[in-house]
Length: 514
Image (cartoon, rainbow, N blue to C red; front, top):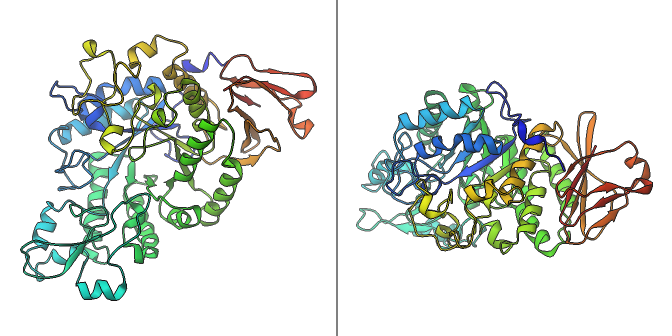
Protein backbone atom coordinates (compact mmCIF):
# COMPACT_ATOMS: atom_id res chain seq x y z
CA UNK A 1 0.00 0.00 0.00
CA UNK A 2 1.37 3.41 -0.90
CA UNK A 3 1.12 5.55 2.21
CA UNK A 4 3.33 8.53 1.50
CA UNK A 5 1.80 9.81 -1.74
CA UNK A 6 -0.77 11.98 0.02
CA UNK A 7 1.89 14.39 1.25
CA UNK A 8 2.25 16.19 -2.07
CA UNK A 9 -0.23 17.06 -4.79
CA UNK A 10 2.41 17.46 -7.53
CA UNK A 11 0.03 19.66 -9.47
CA UNK A 12 1.15 21.49 -12.60
CA UNK A 13 2.30 25.06 -12.15
CA UNK A 14 0.23 27.84 -13.68
CA UNK A 15 2.82 28.23 -16.43
CA UNK A 16 2.35 24.66 -17.69
CA UNK A 17 0.04 23.99 -20.60
CA UNK A 18 -3.16 22.21 -19.74
CA UNK A 19 -2.26 19.31 -22.02
CA UNK A 20 0.12 16.57 -20.92
CA UNK A 21 0.59 16.29 -17.16
CA UNK A 22 -2.55 17.97 -15.92
CA UNK A 23 -3.80 15.66 -13.21
CA UNK A 24 -7.46 15.09 -12.40
CA UNK A 25 -10.40 17.34 -13.34
CA UNK A 26 -13.51 17.82 -11.19
CA UNK A 27 -16.98 18.70 -12.50
CA UNK A 28 -19.08 21.04 -10.33
CA UNK A 29 -22.78 21.89 -10.49
CA UNK A 30 -22.47 25.21 -8.68
CA UNK A 31 -26.10 25.27 -7.50
CA UNK A 32 -25.61 22.03 -5.56
CA UNK A 33 -21.99 22.32 -4.40
CA UNK A 34 -21.59 24.86 -1.59
CA UNK A 35 -23.82 27.66 -0.27
CA UNK A 36 -21.71 30.51 1.14
CA UNK A 37 -24.44 32.98 2.11
CA UNK A 38 -27.22 30.85 3.58
CA UNK A 39 -29.79 31.45 0.85
CA UNK A 40 -29.95 27.74 0.06
CA UNK A 41 -28.31 28.04 -3.37
CA UNK A 42 -24.76 26.98 -4.10
CA UNK A 43 -22.70 29.88 -5.41
CA UNK A 44 -19.32 30.93 -6.76
CA UNK A 45 -18.06 32.12 -3.38
CA UNK A 46 -18.99 28.68 -2.09
CA UNK A 47 -16.77 27.08 -4.72
CA UNK A 48 -13.96 29.48 -3.77
CA UNK A 49 -14.33 28.52 -0.11
CA UNK A 50 -13.78 24.84 -1.01
CA UNK A 51 -10.69 25.27 -3.19
CA UNK A 52 -8.48 24.09 -0.33
CA UNK A 53 -10.59 20.94 -0.13
CA UNK A 54 -10.14 20.36 -3.86
CA UNK A 55 -6.41 21.03 -3.68
CA UNK A 56 -6.11 18.61 -0.77
CA UNK A 57 -8.01 15.99 -2.76
CA UNK A 58 -5.46 16.51 -5.55
CA UNK A 59 -7.64 18.14 -8.19
CA UNK A 60 -5.83 20.19 -10.83
CA UNK A 61 -8.77 21.69 -12.75
CA UNK A 62 -12.44 22.35 -12.11
CA UNK A 63 -15.14 22.34 -14.77
CA UNK A 64 -18.04 24.56 -13.76
CA UNK A 65 -21.39 23.70 -15.31
CA UNK A 66 -23.02 26.83 -16.83
CA UNK A 67 -22.93 29.99 -14.75
CA UNK A 68 -24.41 32.45 -17.29
CA UNK A 69 -27.87 33.97 -16.69
CA UNK A 70 -30.64 31.54 -17.64
CA UNK A 71 -34.31 30.89 -16.87
CA UNK A 72 -33.60 27.22 -16.02
CA UNK A 73 -32.09 25.68 -12.89
CA UNK A 74 -29.42 23.91 -14.96
CA UNK A 75 -28.57 27.03 -17.02
CA UNK A 76 -28.00 25.24 -20.31
CA UNK A 77 -30.23 27.85 -21.99
CA UNK A 78 -28.26 31.08 -21.82
CA UNK A 79 -29.75 34.58 -21.98
CA UNK A 80 -26.47 36.55 -21.69
CA UNK A 81 -23.07 35.24 -22.80
CA UNK A 82 -21.23 37.95 -20.85
CA UNK A 83 -22.99 37.77 -17.52
CA UNK A 84 -23.10 35.70 -14.32
CA UNK A 85 -26.35 34.27 -12.97
CA UNK A 86 -27.33 36.54 -10.09
CA UNK A 87 -28.03 33.64 -7.69
CA UNK A 88 -24.44 32.45 -8.22
CA UNK A 89 -22.81 35.83 -7.60
CA UNK A 90 -21.09 38.50 -9.65
CA UNK A 91 -18.37 38.75 -12.24
CA UNK A 92 -16.05 39.99 -9.50
CA UNK A 93 -16.87 36.86 -7.48
CA UNK A 94 -15.91 34.74 -10.47
CA UNK A 95 -12.68 36.63 -11.05
CA UNK A 96 -11.82 36.07 -7.40
CA UNK A 97 -12.55 32.35 -7.75
CA UNK A 98 -10.20 32.14 -10.73
CA UNK A 99 -7.49 34.11 -8.95
CA UNK A 100 -7.71 31.93 -5.83
CA UNK A 101 -7.81 28.73 -7.91
CA UNK A 102 -4.70 29.73 -9.85
CA UNK A 103 -2.86 30.48 -6.62
CA UNK A 104 -3.50 26.83 -5.68
CA UNK A 105 -2.42 25.44 -9.04
CA UNK A 106 -6.02 24.73 -10.10
CA UNK A 107 -7.27 25.60 -13.59
CA UNK A 108 -10.84 26.76 -14.25
CA UNK A 109 -12.83 25.42 -17.21
CA UNK A 110 -16.13 27.07 -18.10
CA UNK A 111 -19.11 25.26 -19.64
CA UNK A 112 -19.65 27.26 -22.84
CA UNK A 113 -23.11 26.57 -24.27
CA UNK A 114 -23.04 27.78 -27.86
CA UNK A 115 -25.11 25.24 -29.79
CA UNK A 116 -28.27 27.08 -28.77
CA UNK A 117 -29.52 29.95 -26.64
CA UNK A 118 -32.57 30.34 -24.47
CA UNK A 119 -35.71 31.38 -26.32
CA UNK A 120 -35.67 34.27 -23.83
CA UNK A 121 -32.32 35.49 -25.16
CA UNK A 122 -32.70 38.99 -26.64
CA UNK A 123 -31.42 37.65 -29.98
CA UNK A 124 -34.25 35.16 -30.26
CA UNK A 125 -36.84 37.64 -29.00
CA UNK A 126 -35.81 39.91 -31.86
CA UNK A 127 -35.63 37.01 -34.33
CA UNK A 128 -39.29 36.22 -33.69
CA UNK A 129 -40.52 39.71 -34.58
CA UNK A 130 -40.26 39.33 -38.35
CA UNK A 131 -38.36 37.62 -41.13
CA UNK A 132 -36.74 40.97 -41.87
CA UNK A 133 -35.37 41.44 -38.38
CA UNK A 134 -31.54 41.42 -38.44
CA UNK A 135 -31.51 38.66 -35.79
CA UNK A 136 -33.90 36.35 -37.63
CA UNK A 137 -31.07 34.71 -39.53
CA UNK A 138 -29.16 34.09 -36.28
CA UNK A 139 -31.28 30.96 -35.88
CA UNK A 140 -32.24 28.00 -38.09
CA UNK A 141 -35.65 28.44 -39.78
CA UNK A 142 -37.49 26.43 -42.43
CA UNK A 143 -40.93 26.28 -43.95
CA UNK A 144 -42.90 23.07 -43.52
CA UNK A 145 -42.45 22.43 -47.24
CA UNK A 146 -38.65 22.65 -46.92
CA UNK A 147 -38.70 20.39 -43.87
CA UNK A 148 -40.79 17.80 -45.69
CA UNK A 149 -38.68 17.94 -48.85
CA UNK A 150 -35.54 17.16 -46.82
CA UNK A 151 -37.37 14.48 -44.80
CA UNK A 152 -36.20 16.01 -41.52
CA UNK A 153 -39.51 16.58 -39.74
CA UNK A 154 -38.55 14.04 -37.09
CA UNK A 155 -35.30 12.55 -35.87
CA UNK A 156 -34.23 9.39 -34.10
CA UNK A 157 -33.63 9.72 -30.37
CA UNK A 158 -29.91 9.78 -29.54
CA UNK A 159 -28.00 9.35 -26.30
CA UNK A 160 -27.66 13.12 -25.95
CA UNK A 161 -31.15 14.22 -27.04
CA UNK A 162 -34.57 12.69 -26.50
CA UNK A 163 -36.23 15.19 -28.86
CA UNK A 164 -38.00 13.47 -31.79
CA UNK A 165 -39.74 16.58 -33.14
CA UNK A 166 -37.13 19.37 -33.34
CA UNK A 167 -39.16 21.90 -35.35
CA UNK A 168 -41.25 24.46 -33.49
CA UNK A 169 -43.63 27.27 -34.41
CA UNK A 170 -43.57 30.66 -32.70
CA UNK A 171 -47.09 31.40 -31.41
CA UNK A 172 -48.43 34.62 -32.87
CA UNK A 173 -45.44 35.18 -35.15
CA UNK A 174 -46.02 37.09 -38.43
CA UNK A 175 -44.49 34.22 -40.43
CA UNK A 176 -45.11 30.49 -40.76
CA UNK A 177 -41.51 29.24 -40.64
CA UNK A 178 -40.51 26.91 -37.81
CA UNK A 179 -37.30 27.13 -35.84
CA UNK A 180 -34.97 24.20 -35.17
CA UNK A 181 -34.33 23.27 -31.53
CA UNK A 182 -32.58 19.95 -31.08
CA UNK A 183 -33.07 19.62 -27.32
CA UNK A 184 -36.47 21.26 -26.72
CA UNK A 185 -38.46 24.26 -27.84
CA UNK A 186 -36.87 26.45 -25.15
CA UNK A 187 -33.40 26.02 -26.68
CA UNK A 188 -33.39 27.31 -30.30
CA UNK A 189 -30.26 26.35 -32.25
CA UNK A 190 -27.99 29.11 -33.52
CA UNK A 191 -27.23 29.39 -37.25
CA UNK A 192 -23.47 29.04 -37.70
CA UNK A 193 -23.67 29.64 -41.43
CA UNK A 194 -24.18 33.27 -40.42
CA UNK A 195 -20.77 34.97 -40.04
CA UNK A 196 -22.26 37.42 -37.53
CA UNK A 197 -23.15 34.54 -35.19
CA UNK A 198 -19.66 33.08 -35.39
CA UNK A 199 -18.08 36.48 -34.77
CA UNK A 200 -20.23 37.12 -31.71
CA UNK A 201 -19.59 33.69 -30.19
CA UNK A 202 -15.84 34.00 -30.80
CA UNK A 203 -15.94 37.42 -29.17
CA UNK A 204 -17.67 35.97 -26.11
CA UNK A 205 -15.17 33.11 -25.86
CA UNK A 206 -12.25 35.52 -26.02
CA UNK A 207 -13.85 37.66 -23.34
CA UNK A 208 -13.87 34.77 -20.85
CA UNK A 209 -10.34 33.69 -21.77
CA UNK A 210 -8.64 37.09 -21.72
CA UNK A 211 -10.70 39.56 -19.71
CA UNK A 212 -11.93 37.13 -17.06
CA UNK A 213 -9.12 34.57 -17.13
CA UNK A 214 -10.66 31.12 -17.55
CA UNK A 215 -8.29 28.41 -18.79
CA UNK A 216 -10.58 26.79 -21.32
CA UNK A 217 -14.02 25.50 -22.14
CA UNK A 218 -16.15 22.42 -21.95
CA UNK A 219 -18.19 22.61 -25.17
CA UNK A 220 -21.76 21.44 -24.71
CA UNK A 221 -23.45 19.58 -27.57
CA UNK A 222 -20.31 19.89 -29.71
CA UNK A 223 -21.69 17.36 -32.18
CA UNK A 224 -24.78 19.48 -32.81
CA UNK A 225 -23.40 22.91 -33.74
CA UNK A 226 -25.00 22.20 -37.11
CA UNK A 227 -28.22 20.18 -37.45
CA UNK A 228 -27.96 16.39 -37.74
CA UNK A 229 -28.09 16.38 -41.54
CA UNK A 230 -25.14 18.78 -41.77
CA UNK A 231 -22.87 17.20 -39.14
CA UNK A 232 -19.67 17.31 -41.27
CA UNK A 233 -19.80 21.13 -41.05
CA UNK A 234 -19.16 20.81 -37.31
CA UNK A 235 -15.59 19.68 -37.88
CA UNK A 236 -14.63 22.81 -39.79
CA UNK A 237 -16.37 24.99 -37.23
CA UNK A 238 -14.40 23.53 -34.31
CA UNK A 239 -11.13 23.92 -36.21
CA UNK A 240 -11.92 27.60 -36.66
CA UNK A 241 -13.08 27.95 -33.05
CA UNK A 242 -9.86 26.35 -31.83
CA UNK A 243 -7.72 28.71 -33.90
CA UNK A 244 -9.66 31.75 -32.69
CA UNK A 245 -9.31 30.81 -29.01
CA UNK A 246 -5.66 29.84 -29.42
CA UNK A 247 -4.96 33.22 -31.03
CA UNK A 248 -5.72 35.03 -27.78
CA UNK A 249 -4.70 32.36 -25.25
CA UNK A 250 -2.17 29.79 -26.48
CA UNK A 251 -2.76 26.46 -24.77
CA UNK A 252 -6.43 27.18 -24.01
CA UNK A 253 -8.05 23.85 -23.18
CA UNK A 254 -11.13 22.59 -25.01
CA UNK A 255 -13.08 19.42 -24.29
CA UNK A 256 -16.11 18.44 -26.32
CA UNK A 257 -19.31 16.57 -25.58
CA UNK A 258 -19.47 14.28 -28.60
CA UNK A 259 -21.60 11.30 -27.66
CA UNK A 260 -21.14 8.77 -30.46
CA UNK A 261 -18.77 6.03 -31.67
CA UNK A 262 -15.03 6.54 -32.11
CA UNK A 263 -15.02 6.88 -35.89
CA UNK A 264 -17.45 9.80 -35.64
CA UNK A 265 -15.70 11.37 -32.65
CA UNK A 266 -12.29 11.39 -34.36
CA UNK A 267 -12.84 14.36 -36.73
CA UNK A 268 -13.67 16.56 -33.73
CA UNK A 269 -10.07 16.17 -32.54
CA UNK A 270 -9.05 18.38 -35.46
CA UNK A 271 -10.34 21.40 -33.53
CA UNK A 272 -10.89 20.19 -29.96
CA UNK A 273 -8.02 19.06 -27.77
CA UNK A 274 -10.10 16.57 -25.78
CA UNK A 275 -13.40 14.73 -26.13
CA UNK A 276 -15.34 12.74 -23.55
CA UNK A 277 -15.30 8.96 -23.84
CA UNK A 278 -18.88 7.88 -23.22
CA UNK A 279 -18.30 4.36 -24.56
CA UNK A 280 -15.67 3.79 -21.88
CA UNK A 281 -17.99 5.18 -19.20
CA UNK A 282 -20.72 2.68 -20.10
CA UNK A 283 -18.24 -0.20 -20.42
CA UNK A 284 -16.76 0.50 -16.98
CA UNK A 285 -20.20 0.52 -15.42
CA UNK A 286 -20.88 -2.88 -16.99
CA UNK A 287 -17.70 -4.71 -16.04
CA UNK A 288 -17.49 -3.47 -12.44
CA UNK A 289 -20.95 -4.78 -11.66
CA UNK A 290 -20.32 -8.10 -13.40
CA UNK A 291 -16.83 -8.43 -11.87
CA UNK A 292 -15.27 -9.45 -15.18
CA UNK A 293 -14.26 -7.69 -18.37
CA UNK A 294 -17.26 -8.58 -20.52
CA UNK A 295 -16.78 -5.41 -22.59
CA UNK A 296 -13.25 -6.04 -23.86
CA UNK A 297 -12.14 -2.63 -22.61
CA UNK A 298 -8.47 -2.74 -23.61
CA UNK A 299 -9.08 -3.88 -27.22
CA UNK A 300 -11.81 -1.23 -27.47
CA UNK A 301 -9.50 1.51 -26.22
CA UNK A 302 -6.62 0.38 -28.44
CA UNK A 303 -8.93 0.57 -31.45
CA UNK A 304 -10.39 3.94 -30.45
CA UNK A 305 -7.01 5.47 -29.70
CA UNK A 306 -5.69 4.34 -33.09
CA UNK A 307 -8.68 6.00 -34.76
CA UNK A 308 -8.20 9.23 -32.78
CA UNK A 309 -4.44 9.35 -33.37
CA UNK A 310 -4.92 9.19 -37.14
CA UNK A 311 -6.62 12.57 -36.88
CA UNK A 312 -4.61 14.10 -34.03
CA UNK A 313 -1.65 12.28 -32.44
CA UNK A 314 -1.91 14.69 -29.48
CA UNK A 315 -5.55 13.78 -28.73
CA UNK A 316 -6.67 13.76 -25.10
CA UNK A 317 -9.17 11.07 -24.13
CA UNK A 318 -11.37 12.66 -21.44
CA UNK A 319 -12.54 9.75 -19.31
CA UNK A 320 -15.16 9.56 -16.57
CA UNK A 321 -17.38 7.15 -14.67
CA UNK A 322 -20.52 9.29 -15.01
CA UNK A 323 -21.42 12.95 -15.41
CA UNK A 324 -24.38 15.28 -14.92
CA UNK A 325 -26.38 13.56 -17.69
CA UNK A 326 -26.01 9.99 -16.42
CA UNK A 327 -27.27 8.11 -13.38
CA UNK A 328 -24.55 8.38 -10.75
CA UNK A 329 -21.99 5.58 -10.51
CA UNK A 330 -22.99 5.19 -6.84
CA UNK A 331 -26.49 4.15 -7.83
CA UNK A 332 -25.39 2.17 -10.89
CA UNK A 333 -23.29 0.02 -8.51
CA UNK A 334 -26.00 -0.02 -5.80
CA UNK A 335 -23.77 1.75 -3.29
CA UNK A 336 -21.41 -1.25 -3.10
CA UNK A 337 -18.27 0.23 -1.49
CA UNK A 338 -15.92 -2.42 -2.92
CA UNK A 339 -17.25 -1.86 -6.42
CA UNK A 340 -17.00 1.91 -6.02
CA UNK A 341 -13.34 1.57 -5.03
CA UNK A 342 -12.74 -0.61 -8.10
CA UNK A 343 -14.38 2.12 -10.20
CA UNK A 344 -11.97 4.70 -8.74
CA UNK A 345 -9.04 2.34 -9.37
CA UNK A 346 -9.95 2.03 -13.04
CA UNK A 347 -10.71 5.70 -13.64
CA UNK A 348 -7.46 6.88 -12.11
CA UNK A 349 -5.11 4.38 -13.76
CA UNK A 350 -6.51 4.08 -17.30
CA UNK A 351 -4.94 6.34 -19.94
CA UNK A 352 -6.55 9.72 -20.51
CA UNK A 353 -7.59 12.79 -18.55
CA UNK A 354 -9.93 11.66 -15.73
CA UNK A 355 -12.99 13.64 -14.67
CA UNK A 356 -14.69 13.20 -11.31
CA UNK A 357 -18.31 14.31 -11.02
CA UNK A 358 -18.76 16.23 -7.75
CA UNK A 359 -19.64 13.87 -4.93
CA UNK A 360 -18.39 10.70 -6.63
CA UNK A 361 -15.52 10.72 -4.17
CA UNK A 362 -17.98 10.27 -1.28
CA UNK A 363 -20.28 7.84 -3.09
CA UNK A 364 -23.21 10.15 -3.78
CA UNK A 365 -26.24 8.45 -5.30
CA UNK A 366 -28.72 9.48 -7.98
CA UNK A 367 -30.73 8.16 -10.89
CA UNK A 368 -32.61 9.90 -13.69
CA UNK A 369 -34.42 12.28 -14.04
CA UNK A 370 -31.59 14.82 -14.10
CA UNK A 371 -32.55 16.71 -10.94
CA UNK A 372 -31.88 13.56 -8.93
CA UNK A 373 -28.31 13.26 -10.19
CA UNK A 374 -27.58 16.88 -9.27
CA UNK A 375 -28.41 16.80 -5.57
CA UNK A 376 -26.60 18.82 -2.87
CA UNK A 377 -23.09 17.82 -1.81
CA UNK A 378 -22.94 16.43 1.75
CA UNK A 379 -20.18 18.31 3.56
CA UNK A 380 -21.22 17.20 7.04
CA UNK A 381 -24.21 15.73 8.86
CA UNK A 382 -27.16 18.00 8.24
CA UNK A 383 -27.26 19.60 11.70
CA UNK A 384 -23.64 20.72 11.32
CA UNK A 385 -23.69 21.45 7.59
CA UNK A 386 -23.87 25.22 7.10
CA UNK A 387 -22.67 24.92 3.50
CA UNK A 388 -25.15 22.35 2.23
CA UNK A 389 -27.25 23.61 -0.66
CA UNK A 390 -31.01 23.44 -0.28
CA UNK A 391 -31.83 24.01 -3.92
CA UNK A 392 -33.92 20.83 -3.78
CA UNK A 393 -34.72 18.17 -1.23
CA UNK A 394 -32.50 15.17 -1.80
CA UNK A 395 -34.15 11.91 -2.82
CA UNK A 396 -31.03 9.76 -3.12
CA UNK A 397 -28.06 11.37 -1.34
CA UNK A 398 -29.13 11.91 2.26
CA UNK A 399 -27.43 11.44 5.63
CA UNK A 400 -29.16 8.06 5.83
CA UNK A 401 -27.78 6.78 2.51
CA UNK A 402 -24.41 8.52 2.05
CA UNK A 403 -21.76 9.14 4.70
CA UNK A 404 -21.01 12.89 4.61
CA UNK A 405 -17.51 14.09 3.80
CA UNK A 406 -16.53 15.14 7.35
CA UNK A 407 -17.09 11.60 8.62
CA UNK A 408 -15.34 10.02 5.65
CA UNK A 409 -12.30 12.22 6.12
CA UNK A 410 -11.85 10.70 9.59
CA UNK A 411 -12.07 7.12 8.28
CA UNK A 412 -8.88 5.81 6.60
CA UNK A 413 -10.90 3.11 4.79
CA UNK A 414 -13.55 5.48 3.40
CA UNK A 415 -14.22 5.96 -0.29
CA UNK A 416 -13.05 9.57 0.02
CA UNK A 417 -9.65 8.58 1.39
CA UNK A 418 -9.37 5.87 -1.26
CA UNK A 419 -9.88 8.51 -3.97
CA UNK A 420 -7.45 10.87 -2.30
CA UNK A 421 -4.67 8.28 -2.08
CA UNK A 422 -5.18 7.25 -5.70
CA UNK A 423 -5.26 10.81 -7.02
CA UNK A 424 -2.09 11.75 -5.18
CA UNK A 425 -0.32 8.63 -6.41
CA UNK A 426 -1.42 9.42 -9.96
CA UNK A 427 -0.26 13.02 -9.64
CA UNK A 428 3.13 11.84 -8.38
CA UNK A 429 3.75 9.32 -11.16
CA UNK A 430 5.06 10.60 -14.51
CA UNK A 431 3.51 7.76 -16.51
CA UNK A 432 0.06 7.64 -14.90
CA UNK A 433 -0.21 11.43 -14.90
CA UNK A 434 0.65 11.70 -18.61
CA UNK A 435 -2.55 12.28 -20.60
CA UNK A 436 -0.63 11.43 -23.74
CA UNK A 437 0.89 8.15 -22.52
CA UNK A 438 0.51 5.12 -24.79
CA UNK A 439 -1.73 2.18 -23.96
CA UNK A 440 -0.40 -1.30 -24.71
CA UNK A 441 -1.89 -4.77 -24.33
CA UNK A 442 -0.33 -6.77 -21.50
CA UNK A 443 -0.62 -10.30 -22.86
CA UNK A 444 -2.26 -11.31 -19.58
CA UNK A 445 -5.46 -13.29 -19.87
CA UNK A 446 -7.53 -13.85 -16.73
CA UNK A 447 -11.30 -13.85 -16.48
CA UNK A 448 -11.52 -11.51 -13.48
CA UNK A 449 -8.41 -9.38 -14.09
CA UNK A 450 -8.16 -6.32 -16.30
CA UNK A 451 -4.49 -5.78 -17.17
CA UNK A 452 -2.72 -3.24 -19.36
CA UNK A 453 0.56 -1.41 -19.88
CA UNK A 454 0.99 2.35 -20.03
CA UNK A 455 4.13 3.81 -21.56
CA UNK A 456 5.50 7.34 -21.47
CA UNK A 457 8.90 7.84 -23.07
CA UNK A 458 11.29 5.23 -21.65
CA UNK A 459 9.11 4.43 -18.63
CA UNK A 460 6.23 2.00 -18.43
CA UNK A 461 3.96 0.51 -15.81
CA UNK A 462 1.95 -2.69 -15.71
CA UNK A 463 -1.48 -2.19 -14.14
CA UNK A 464 -3.50 -5.10 -12.75
CA UNK A 465 -7.12 -4.77 -11.61
CA UNK A 466 -8.84 -7.63 -9.83
CA UNK A 467 -12.52 -7.04 -10.53
CA UNK A 468 -13.67 -9.87 -8.25
CA UNK A 469 -13.89 -10.45 -4.50
CA UNK A 470 -11.48 -13.40 -4.38
CA UNK A 471 -7.75 -12.77 -4.50
CA UNK A 472 -5.96 -14.33 -7.45
CA UNK A 473 -2.49 -15.10 -8.75
CA UNK A 474 -1.66 -13.46 -12.06
CA UNK A 475 0.82 -15.00 -14.45
CA UNK A 476 2.78 -12.21 -16.11
CA UNK A 477 3.40 -13.06 -19.73
CA UNK A 478 5.93 -13.04 -21.23
CA UNK A 479 7.89 -14.12 -18.16
CA UNK A 480 10.68 -11.60 -18.68
CA UNK A 481 8.12 -8.82 -18.27
CA UNK A 482 8.13 -9.54 -14.53
CA UNK A 483 11.89 -9.40 -14.11
CA UNK A 484 13.06 -6.39 -12.16
CA UNK A 485 9.55 -5.07 -11.61
CA UNK A 486 8.41 -3.95 -8.17
CA UNK A 487 5.03 -3.08 -6.75
CA UNK A 488 4.65 0.70 -6.53
CA UNK A 489 0.90 0.78 -5.79
CA UNK A 490 -1.20 -1.73 -3.89
CA UNK A 491 -4.64 -0.37 -3.02
CA UNK A 492 -5.51 -3.18 -0.60
CA UNK A 493 -2.12 -3.64 1.03
CA UNK A 494 -1.66 -7.39 0.67
CA UNK A 495 -0.37 -7.81 -2.89
CA UNK A 496 2.93 -9.61 -3.29
CA UNK A 497 5.29 -11.01 -5.86
CA UNK A 498 5.38 -14.81 -5.81
CA UNK A 499 7.68 -17.41 -7.28
CA UNK A 500 8.26 -17.28 -10.99
CA UNK A 501 7.51 -13.58 -11.17
CA UNK A 502 3.78 -13.99 -10.67
CA UNK A 503 1.75 -11.45 -8.71
CA UNK A 504 -0.83 -12.12 -6.03
CA UNK A 505 -3.57 -9.51 -6.52
CA UNK A 506 -6.04 -9.12 -3.64
CA UNK A 507 -9.79 -9.16 -4.23
CA UNK A 508 -11.02 -5.81 -5.60
CA UNK A 509 -7.42 -4.64 -5.60
CA UNK A 510 -5.34 -2.58 -8.01
CA UNK A 511 -1.63 -3.26 -8.32
CA UNK A 512 0.82 -1.17 -10.31
CA UNK A 513 4.23 -2.60 -11.12
CA UNK A 514 7.21 -0.73 -12.48
